[in-house]
Length: 371
Image 1: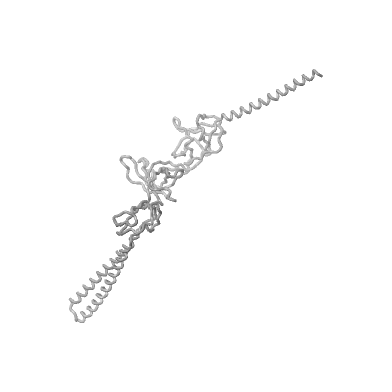
Image 2: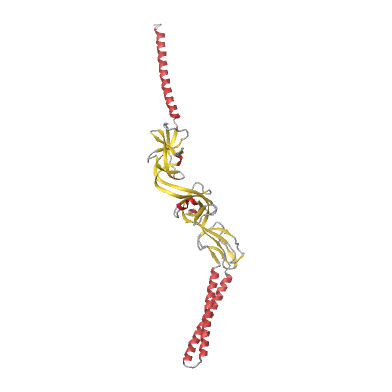
């Protein structure tokens, strides 16, 4: 019985050693699989699809308003009121400045009085002429008397017309005491002060219509034949980071600068909220050419080879080296004319050190760059 106990202990020890060995082998196998998975390169892919591809040219220009006006009074006088300040938005017809109207109101009253006298004189001269014509037909007066009455009537009519003109001028001068905004816009400069004397030779305000702005940029002459009015342009400005604005080419200048070999185009765009201001630096992407239904590959997937471009296409988690032929190229997308099919997946991220035939791990999510 005593000899049996040591044998039993030995058996138990051997059994436990076997279980431990199995567990170690299983753990080692799982660790090896995890290490193998970890060693597989992780890549981000994008699916090839059909979409518009734009070929663009980037240029830098400055923002200017659709309309700018330097405004001054048309009559002289002392400034009574300036209800606006720099930076204020003023609707068309809004008051910018009021000149003291006292003298102009008196001038209008005088002109109206003179007009009344001239009207009375004309009516009297017309009556005298009518009576003189009757007397002349009755041979009661001479022809000279009749001609004198005609002359008096004509002189009275001339004086009446002069009085009408004088009253119109007086009314206009009184109206011009109110200097009003010629269009809806922003007051960008005020150079007059209340209480000062002003006159027609003085500039008092600068106004800009910023509801629509324009950007003028220079483009190289080699793309002159590719640019058309109506082509689109995308504008970005440093002062409004992270936002772009869409515009349209509204003018193409007809001459080429002989020194820079460039031509100028004007891009017009709406400016809601007046975020864009005159003088800001604008970077524009002008569309030269567009393919509306092109098979597109992201530019980040392209690698320049000796004779052509290549991409790494992923099928069944295996990366394959694939030469491609390209058409027009945009900033982020390029037209594919050969080598890929719609629905193929190409590597966007993780290209460093990648070789054909390598098994890869695809990261969650797919890239989708815009054109």
